[in-house]
Length: 293
Image 1 (tube, one colour):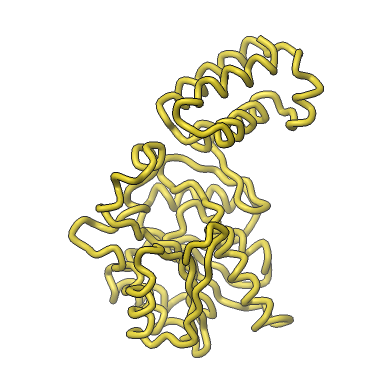
Image 2: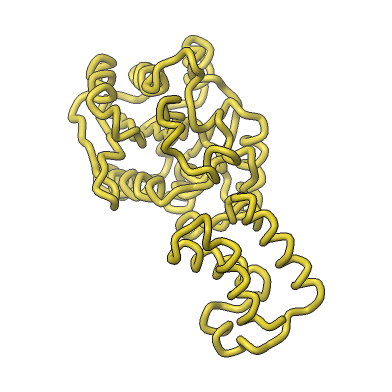
């Protein structure tokens, strides 16, 4: 089997589950991982045969793709900005919208703390892969960056990614829904200038509209609040934590559910947030919010 034939097989295997553009992107990711060739190099070498080991690995990838497993879980990694990060089914796959959130935080730090980035305290709540704090540590290497999560599995992945990237971020376990416990623990971190979070925010009623590769494989702990709790519960708890542990003039940045923008803003106001600003993502949805405390 040649590289060209492998590409044809991959696209055929995913055609029933993804549109042509996404099927092509998945095919490119698998082939680049399999061959080590860039897209241009694969065109040049499209008649080069795959080894027996490569053909075996291709068969495994196709098997899991047909089960609708996300390609990032099959490969074991995902890209987030300039970082290549380990992923598995303990963590959400980093999304482009979260890259936009990080970029917004980066702009804020540059605008409000230019030349004074050293010693800034930044905390990511619900860190998953660690993509947010690791990116911020890369941009602001002299800052103090932390990430927390309730999941031991996620924290294991985040710590692995810290070692993998050589970026020194401190990760720890906490449950932000346990208000007093979380407040005590976060208070020990020292002065915090920024809190960032992409918390679970999908309501159970939205499940029927979700893609199978998300619903069947990504961790529900990171997608949905508990059934008995409202979709906005994490915004409420994080906003009140921010009011307690941020320095005066500190900022809270959140990725949010576009269906609950008003409710989220009301919770930020109730917690004492001011200068609330909403930002749309590249799809035009109201996806991010920040405020001052």
